[in-house]
Amino acid sequence: MTSEQILEGVKRALLPLEISDGTDQIKRAGQRRAAVLMPLVMRENWQVILTQRPETMPSHPGQISFPGGKVEGEETARAAALRETEEEIGVKHGSIELLGRLPSFNAVSEYRVTPFVGIVSPEAHIIADPVEVADVFETPMSFLMNRENHVPREISFNGESHRLWDMPYQGPDGIHRNIWGMTAMMIYRVFQRGFENEA
Image: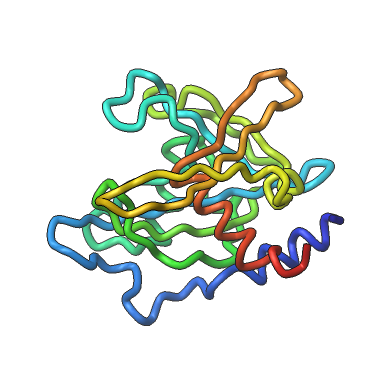
């Protein structure tokens, strides 16, 4: 896929930025709102910026994730995604062009999550907060949008069988990382909505 085809596919996958139907609001008792950003950056080709949580974190230690977290007070999901991105990897909102969002969903961890997708300026300085981020790395979109790199995994939850997708990746730094869980699910959602019928 060319860089142009990748960007076209991403845009096909996305909903408008404005949320007019309340889909990002909590859907059950005890739930909290959260938002994440799937940051894209153009190097020689389109890359996705990913983070790895420290092993010392009380929740999801070592997991690969997008910048994101809880929606605070009266802020919008969009504002939360941008704030968390700056807090976690140091990229200010002026260096991000938001393209749209993916459908909000209920996470297993009692959050109602709204994912946004945006383009980060290649000149932006990425400075990880060591408390929340152990590592920042990039993975080519061409790799993530290739169905051959999606490894199915069946799990049982609340008595029901679910198919998840792992995306094991070995980068140019020689480090093997497995992109899995909620992060892989969101990436797979982009593939389904923007690329699956084009491949």
